[in-house]
Length: 472
Image (tube, rainbow, N blue to C red; front, side, top):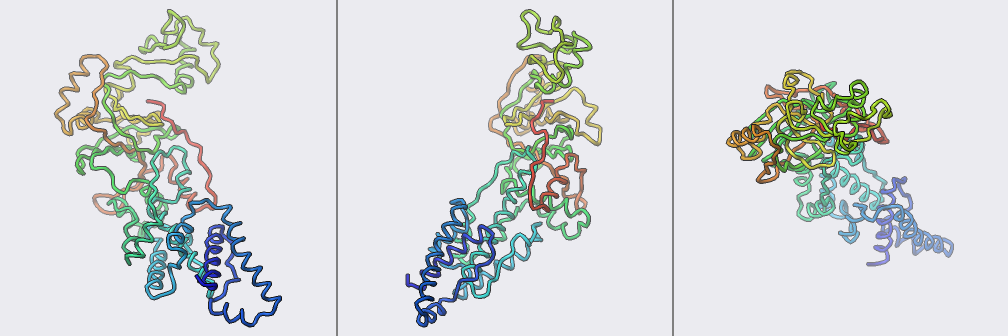
């Protein structure tokens, strides 16, 4: 590396740090040729000033870098390139820059704001311009592929795993193989539902913000959904079962009410519990059952419930002074036996997850006939639970007789799945319509409203929502 290259290397490193920190463009850089010409004509004072400036470049870079994480993607990108500029210097690099700028200019077609990917053009400051384009392009790659990170925190009940592709390696490989456009165009979701939203966006009118919100949520999912999967759309209160990539079952479901929404997550079905008991959450016991016990101390006995840790010899709390229990508290744990009164019904699909939500039967079948089926404490009641359980166990309806016999025994039993079945709890307020265009569902949980506001805002604030399922 010559002296001129050393100055240029230092300036590039300074610009990487400066663009990361969002500072104003640096006006101190010079063309390499100007450096040599100016050096020959400098007096002592000018030479000392230049030396001080040369010292200030790594110092300023180090100071800015101290506030950055070691994983800054722009720094990693240029480290992989040994600080060689990516977007200028020869015809190929210039062509790549033009391709990159063209893709960024079309960000709106993917539901992204082009203003988030603006690049600076600071005259002849090649280092600043190069770092600016790299930062904008890497941000676009992340946002179009996995979504803007801050938008996932708008609601506190999002349990979808975040993908972390190596965008730096992808960009460097695409430049090396001269396949930049192909790589960039492959990043957005390719699911038919996302493509339908994208196609409808230009003509969606006053619904465009809703389309944008749904496009953003699609980026939170895996690149490809598993061919065998269950998908619950809480906005539509509908369930789909896919096997070998084909839709084999749809069912109406009852999901969480707005005050206790069904969260967004991916879980894996492990097995079917037949004739399940119900261990009632403390929140339900304190808020809903305690007032009933204050009015009728025999209420537990009449509903097949017992206290797991109640007074000795009094499993149904008949001797407890319930009126003395403070409002909003509950000193015991309640379990309801299997039976016709149990809100879990006769079948429950076990789905270990941090929200403790699951799919289950219900004795209250009439509620499936309602158009608004956001009625539960957060878990999901399934109208077609028997065929769903059979498909989960045997990939067809052949297990229905076996399940029916197990129900008829009255005993609680567990039927393990041969392989775990992915279950997605999602929120699609805009979906493709078989007759063309899109079908929209009410924003029952306010997720669209909060996400749209966050997409427009400079600061993202966490929304307070009731995330945990309360098992009902």
